Amino acid sequence: MLNPKSNIMKTNWRILLLLPFFALLMFTSCQEEVVDITEPTEAEALVADSELTTFVSATSKMDGSRDNIIDRASCISVKLPLTVIANGLEIIIDSEEDFEVIEAIFDEFDEDEDSLEMIFPITIINADHDEVVINNADELEAYVEECGGENEEDDDIECIDFKYPISFSIFNADFLIIDTIEIENDEQLHRFIKRVRNNEVIASINYPVTMVLADGTEIEVNSNEELHRTIKEAKDACDEDDDNDHNDDDFTKERLDNYLVKCPWLVNEFKRNAVALTDRYFDYAINFKEDGVVVMRARNGDMLTGTWETRIVMGRGAKLKMEFENLADFTLEWFIYEIAEGKVKIYDGDGGRIIMHRNCDVVIDHTIERVENYLQECLWRIARLSVDNTDNEKDYIGTPLKFFENNVVKIRINGELVEGTYEVFVVNAGGPIGLTIELEGRPDLKLHWLITFLGPDLIKLENNHNRMVLKRHCPDVDDDLNYIDDVLMSGIWKVASYMVQDADLTENYLDYVIGFGEEGKLFAEGDGRNIVGSWLSYRHEGLFLGVKFDDDILGEFNHRWRIKEITPNRIELKDYSATGAIERVLVLEATNN
Image (tube, rainbow, N blue to C red):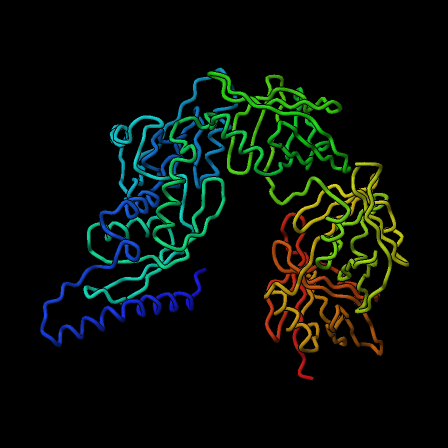
């Protein structure tokens, strides 16, 4: 979000630039001379008929190509929700994700004739973001014809976008800044620029502004000149996809190659000869390199090297050929039948299919130094630990690991650090990277783990049928976690309510008080006993509190609880089942002591 202080600074700066001008104006007016006031230059304000203003307007036009599978027109879009009949099946389209439902129906059979009907009336949105009610197919066809044919040149710019919000300074007739407005989306920007082009307002953009290219790359611009150059260079640099091919297989070889080499890819679905092999190849990481070499990392860390190339087949789209000496399942020339943002689908005619998702954070070429540096950046919590088909992660609730230099590793238990050793190693020459951990009393960690996945916040390790998942925990950079920790450590807590489904078990814990100490030390008193344990607040698709007591009674609370509410006086924690049902609710309230 834009920093309000920075806006004030920019506004003041502009006023300071204008002060000498107005000082001169006052001086000359005292001499009763006629002074012609000139508008701000194009370097400062948007000029109504300039190319830059035209570019900004075209960039903010409504792009109607995303729903061409429905309306077959790129200058209009159908407002959702909408009811359609696709190949005889009635479907309610609530979001753009539902376009894939239509596509799946169309792709189910290769030999049938696809048809789509809309239930009128409908509302369309034109390029200027205006809404129009359409009552029948003939009215719609008139608007479709106005859009022109597939891939015809049009006025909108789709290869670059503004990253919102952005703000403008507004000048009055004397060219003093009288207001600052914030723009949140394309529609607001397009309507505002229309006022600029009609000479209804004089405005300048408050820089810096971030522009987003079609491939997701972000570019920061700091002046009108930079913005003009950036849009001009990018406006024709991508395929605007203004066609009616819902499979999106009209890309060029150059575009396809650049798309594949941009980042590594992870296998999400795999079939060969109509046999599902996803369990075997899930999360295999593939890196297409510019020199025609493809490197694949298996889940066990093995590196496989092969070759790849693409070609365009007239009337059939594009094909991707991969060859591996020791991986026959991937070795084939595959047809590419869909490219979406961050996703590629390929298939062959014998029931084979691969769906890959792009992940620019995956590291394929591991090195010992890279892994060691990564481990030492933050704490790591054990999110999953399965040894000999037994889940042991409950033994590590609230007990993160910390890796240090010189092969020292420490685990935080009951607020105390227990020291051990670790080693990052290479399995054979040029083989996968492994990790060993030795901590007293923790034999389930003392295995030769192979690193199978290394992401920005996640490390997956395997050993035969054993599995471990480490998730990075950097609490100091998370304001929400800092607040939670401050609240927890600021008082003494009692159990105000403990519900297991419909059973109220609060009475069993009324004699206990609980405290959250520094360094993850958990303590409790009650029934004449002093009890210790471990705790950790962390983020994982929400905010959680891990609690583990070394006690049979309070051990009932040992769990990774989702934090539903937290104030200085009250904490509400919930335990959800795999289906999303609430199984337990634990409420802690601050005591007055």
